[in-house]
Amino acid sequence: MKRKVIIPLALILTGALAGINLLTAKTETTITGTADYAFTATELIDTYSNQPHHSDSLYLERILLVEGTIKYVTPVSHGICVELNTGDEMETITGTVDSTAIPENLILSSGRNVILKGRCKGYTEEDMLGLKNVSLIHCSIRTR
Image (cartoon, rainbow, N blue to C red):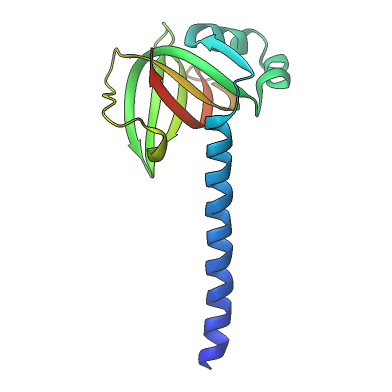
């Protein structure tokens, strides 16, 4: 009976460890990789707002450098979510930064100029409220 329980638990644990390793590898690849494109936060949101399908064809799953001013920093599981100001309250760029990719002694607060480097996950637009967002994942962050 113990053997019937231990083997499935071992398989689940192995799968979980493999998943964590894959996630870590993607984060490291994004952080150490060369950026494909560079934008200010305003340029990126404007580009996506004007031509979302064309922008996806160019930037989706690509590594982007985005420079902007921090609007909000929110703690999330294993890191932070940084929201960059685009000049419009209804438009944002968000980037999730793993805790291992945050430089030591870096103080992140609203109004601070930073550069996010991350993998573009695309654009969302909420029709009813008019909210627009471009999301980046596996980000690194640095000051200007």
